[in-house]
Structure formats: C-alpha cells, structure tokens
Amino acid sequence: MLNFSLSPEQLELQQKARKFAIEVVLPVAWHYDEKDELPLWVLKKAYDEGLMNSDIPEAYGGAGYGLVEGAIITEEIAAACPGIATSIFDNSLGFEPLVLSGNEQLKKKYLPEIVNNFKRICFATSEPTMGSDVAGIQCRAKKDGDSWILNGTKYWITNAGVADYMTIFATVDPEEKHNGICAFIVEKDWEGVRVGKHIPKLGQRTSNTAGISLKNVRVPAENLLSPPGEGFVLAMKTFSRTRPIIGAFAVGAARSAMEYSINYAKKRRAFGSRLSTYQAIQFKLAEMYQKVETSRLLVLKGAWEADNGIDPTITASIGKFYATESAMQVLSDALQIFGGYGYTKMFPIEKLLRDTRLFTIYEGTSEVQRIIISGYLLSMYQSAMPPMEEVPILTGHDQLFDVDGTSIDATAWRCPLCGYIHYGEEHPEECPYCFVKGEGFREIWGKGRRASDE
Ligand SMILES: Cc1cc2nc3c(=O)[nH]c(=O)nc-3n(C[C@H](O)[C@H](O)[C@H](O)COP(=O)(O)OP(=O)(O)OC[C@H]3O[C@@H](n4cnc5c(N)ncnc54)[C@H](O)[C@@H]3O)c2cc1C
Image 1: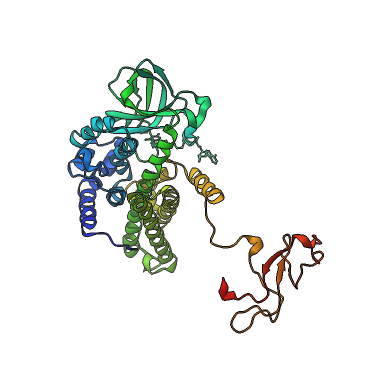
Image 2: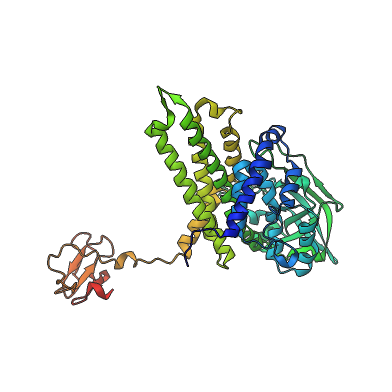
C-alpha cells in the first residue's frame, strides 16, 4: 500500500508543468518582479494549459485532480517564480470554500464560470487589523430582508486586483468571535465594492496583492456560502487543504536554489579550487537536498491525506511549517554559496529569497502552525508509550529476570514524585529519597510477570 512513486499520469503532468515553468514563467519572472506587476497573460496561459484550477471537481467541468497533482504542478511553477505560482494557485484558494461548501446552487453558478471562462476568484479573511486571529474578523454582515449587507475592509488579498469574484469572510457580530463568522461569494462589479492599489512588497512582486473596501454591499441570500457560526470552520478546512500547496511553493523555490547552488559551486573557483571541492560547501549542498526531500515528503503526505478522505489538518500544518522554514534556510545557504553575486539582482538567489520569505507568513504564520500542532499534541495526540508513572524503569535489582524474561522474585513499586524504585511484596512506608508517603507508590512490575507478556 505504501508507495512513494508518482503514477505515469502524474509524471506526465509534472513534465508538462516543468516545461511551462521553464519556457513561459522563468523568462519573464525578473521583468515582472522589477515592474512589480502580475502578468495576467501568464495566468491565462496556465489556464489554457490546464495548470490552473486543477482541483475543481469533474461534476462542475473541472479536471478533478487531487491535491497531490496540485502540489506537483505548484512545485514546478514555484521553482521558476514563486510569485506567479502564488497567483496561479490563488484561484484554488478562492474557490476551495465553495467546493467544500454544501451549496450546490452556488457551485453550479460559479465553478463552471471559473473553469470555462477564465474567471478569477480571490479569498479574503485578512483585514488591516487582523490576520492570524481569523475569529477576530471585523467586516460586518447584516441580514436585510432577503439579502445581506456587507461593510468592512479586507487587506492583503492576493489577486484582488484581477479577481472577478471574491470569497469574503465576515461576521454578524465581532463579539461573537468564531460563532459570528460567515462567508459569501461577492462579485467585484457589485455596487459598494472597491479594490485598492497594488501593495508594494519585498518579494512576490509578480503576484497582485490589494485591499478590498466593502461599503453597503448588498449580497443576495443565495450567495451566502456559509451561515454565521460555520464560516470559521469553513476557513480552517480550506487552510487544511491549501497549506500543503504553500509547502509545495517552498519545495519548488528551495529546489531551484539548491540546483543553482550546485551549478555555481562546480564552476566558481576560490583558493585555487572549485567551491564544490570544499567540504564546507558540500555539506551545505547535502543539507539543502535533505531539506528539499523531507519537505516534499511532508507536503505530499498532507496532500495524499486530503485526497484519501483523511483529515489533513495536522500534516498540512507540519508540512507548511517545516517546508517554509526549511526553504528559508536553504535560500540563506544558497546566497552564502554565491557570495557577493548572490546578493545582486543579476543572479537568481536574491529574488528567490525575497519571494520565499512570504511563505512563513501567509496562510497561517509559523507561529500559528506551532499553536495548531502543540494544541493537537496536548489535547488529541494518542501516546504509544505508557504514562510516565507506569514506565518500568527496573533498575537497582540484580536478579529481577530469569533467562526467559520472567520476573523471578520481586514486585516493583515506583515513587510518584522522585521515581525511586522499591522492590518487595508491599510498597515502602515512605520514600527514602523524597519522603513521600508509601501509599502513593505505583506497582509497575508484578512478581512472576514476563517481559514478553507486554
Ligand atoms: C503577500 C501576501 C499575500 C496575502 N494573501 C492573502 C489572501 O489572499 N487572503 C487573505 O485573507 N490573507 C492574505 N494574506 C494575509 C496573511 O494571511 C496574513 O498576513 C497572516 O495571516 C498574518 O497576519 P498579520 O499579517 O495580520 O499578522 P498578525 O496576525 O498581526 O501577527 C503578527 C506577528 O505576531 C505573531 N502572532 C500573532 N498571534 C500570535 C500568538 N497567539 N502567538 C504567537 N505569535 C503570534 C504572528 O505569527 C506574526 O509573526 C496575505 C499576506 C501577504 C503578506
């Protein structure tokens, strides 16, 4: 059952995405980075090639690919330009809540438009005053007869400047936190919707990012994607499916940095030898490869879980967290290998590093991933090992076991505080080390018990 190979179809898709990345994306990446502009025509080409909207179900006219295929495509495009990859993938982020929702009417209305007519859809939870704390949304949704009225500002919205539709998360009452969050599909042309200027950024300049102002926007009831109380969960379920793809961006960017570094290290000479002959450089390359490979495994595991009906939330968080942090380390090492040239705009590392820096921020910062993972560990994780006080640390007894692993003559008791082990029929009166009363001692091993009984 466990299988780490891609199918022939997936390999073909990978080759197609790689060709597109190298022939279409790579030659224009620095030009549009300098212009600080999203090349919409590249998105159109990706759409024409079937490399956009990959996971829209076939029932709505889509290719019906899984997240594994999405990750494969994304790694290749991000390897050429993480910013363009972000904007191509952003459509999936935008329609994912719709695909996840049970609203058939809305799916039939919007998904075929996205598939057939190159419509763009963006995703908006973030606002000028909140990003990580999704339950802290301030944008207000008020029921008015048959429709809803939206008022508020969304910020940092990828592709807002080129979107036709917007998945907007709002709240009926900010005081209600999670319970107040709802979601809507809003059309950009509706009265009261305005998109701000493209926000100038450190990296990912080839991806459009803008704010959205919503002033008394009337949304028909049928465009309610998620009723109050269900919007927060919908946003979280969306992230569980999109975080593996953010990890795939990081894998692609790190892989490129590694490949450029190998190439450079084999050519550049210092102190009479090629850089690649120095162990300090070789070890950097080895660590880069280790990070790329381990990140990809985690990313694909999260995607595979989602495709196989397993809740991918935790693997998606670990994968996003690990791949994006690792990618930053890879980029930093790559720049070091390139020396001064790495720091210039005439070599590819500088832009990749700027682009990669975003990955630990959007779709849940690394701190948010730590919160999710530690929350899971402390509340739901099932330990395989026995509780601490039952661990059979059987020290201090020379003849405890017979040759077949049978405990020969002793029952063992463990002090609940300091861990001292007492052997005897009964627990001691008190612990000789920490003086805790003997009643608290736990029997951790019984006389005559076999080690193999466990
Ligand atoms: C280029 C770009 C594109 C984006 N695209 C989109 C998009 O398409 N749609 C969308 O909705 N949003 C988008 N975002 C927003 C992005 O998701 C947020 O920036 C991100 O979630 C962080 O929110 P924030 O910037 O408000 O930071 P804050 O939430 O203000 O956090 C600031 C810092 O504090 C840390 N922090 C916050 N809370 C805690 C805590 N409890 N414990 C420890 N540390 C904490 C954070 O990790 C972070 O380091 C985009 C952002 C950027 C920069």
